[in-house]
Amino acid sequence: MTARFRILLGLFVALGPASSLAQQPVSGARLYANHCAACHGEFGEGDGPVASALRVTMPNLRTLAMRSGGTFPADAVRAYVDGREIPAAHGDRYMPIWGDVFGWGPEGELDEARAEQRLTAVVEHVRALQYE
Image 1 (tube, rainbow, N blue to C red):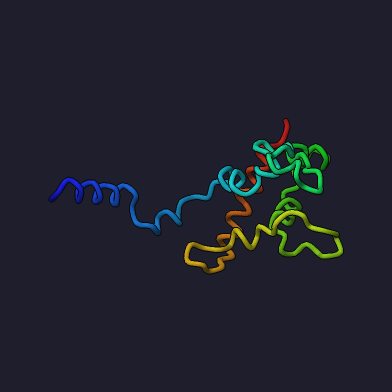
Image 2: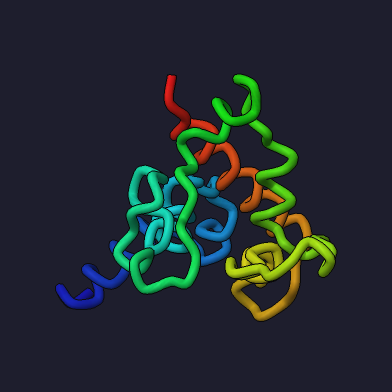
């Protein structure tokens, strides 16, 4: 066995099959950093690097519970992040419809369970950002 082959074999064993990567738990923090922080800011305070270029003011996500009487409005946050069932009568939607984006799997298929898992992870991350 050549050294090059041993290195490649070691990497393959260490990383495991590609399907195991798809089965790893979803990180709400990672999803938020990749999809939300550019507008909402690293800590959800509405100060992301793109926020100043937008037509709307980014809300401070850290105050959602305070603005809802001390209870984090998980269902409302989930519905808004998902975006697939927000009625048009509620006005313009400046945020992407993440429910569709989060549902696309690695093979290009739409997977509702995947979307639900990722939506839950993002909502729980936003819950964790709340001011005490």
